Image (cartoon, rainbow, N blue to C red; front, side):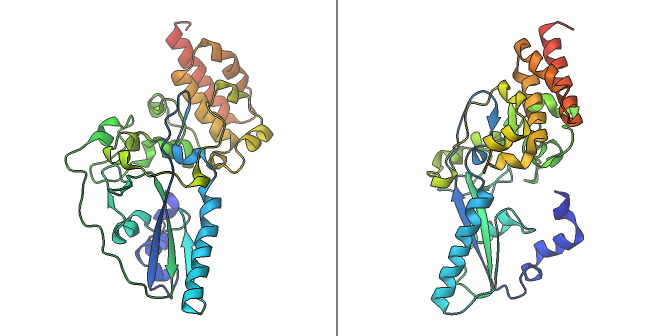
Length: 296
């Protein structure tokens, strides 16, 4: 992401003391969510429950409170969960939580990769854990072979310009036409590289607050969602990050990829939406269905 590439954040990633000058230790935690397979339009499993940005920070504060009670004095601290310019997976590897797999995900041999990471920078010295130094991907290339957009690079990084997760969440503009048909029926995030990873057969039970709770399955009826309806349906959900315009953009593309002629009226209505971004993708989706059905 561009904000991580700025000179200021590049320096902060390299030196945690630029974030917390008193930093002596970093506590790294992993919180599991449940991998869920569902039909129709697909959402990444972590986003099916409540927003982890709301759930995890209060728990991190509780841990800080506990540490301060144990040492008997305030402890300088900063904590993050996917919210700050730090290299979470690298820190987790150094803390002994796992290795960074070919799909760039942190993989734990007992828990796979279906968990969220969080970090607490602390102004006290803790006993360090041994780093995870071995790699258990071996010759397996299932994640690379399964990626529809070929965004997984040989150096274990991701080309975000064509990553379905990036395109459907962080990307605020149009989805490039040359990859729209490759996004399939994903409307928020993507789990493909994790679904094919053999280590995820060890995925632990989900944290109770991250259990799926949004209405499933998602259908093309959602193409008619107004802003208040969208906000109500995805209240406290990570899907709010895409906003209505991004959600309908994604759903229009997925409808173009997986829908049928019966969806054309809804797409035609969406072509008149107040958001130009939504209009553009609805038009593309309608034309794709028409070409597929032979009506144009």
